[in-house]
View: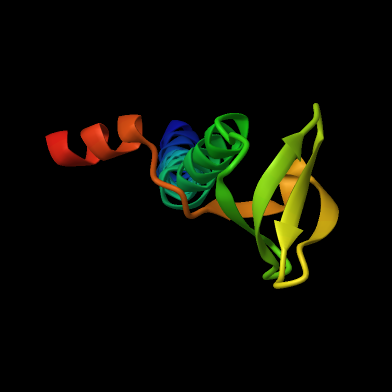
Length: 125
């Protein structure tokens, strides 16, 4: 009878070990999938979010440095010269008949005028 009980105990231990090994595999799989997700998020940050923030910072700096007399282009494609600058708007003079248009500052997409400080910075590069 002792042999039968010992045999049952050995069989139970043998079947219990693969279950524990399976649990270890599941934990390793879970950790590896979390690591992959974190790596994908870090990659997305450096490939998409960071360059976009850099462009936004450069555009804001360009808009803050606008001066009267600068030739600018709006996001709608209107080109003109700044004749008056307010807090959040600028008045540009455009066309042969010198018509004036007031546009929001965020609508300026490009400054075509190169100032002395910008020329020096380009020459240094």
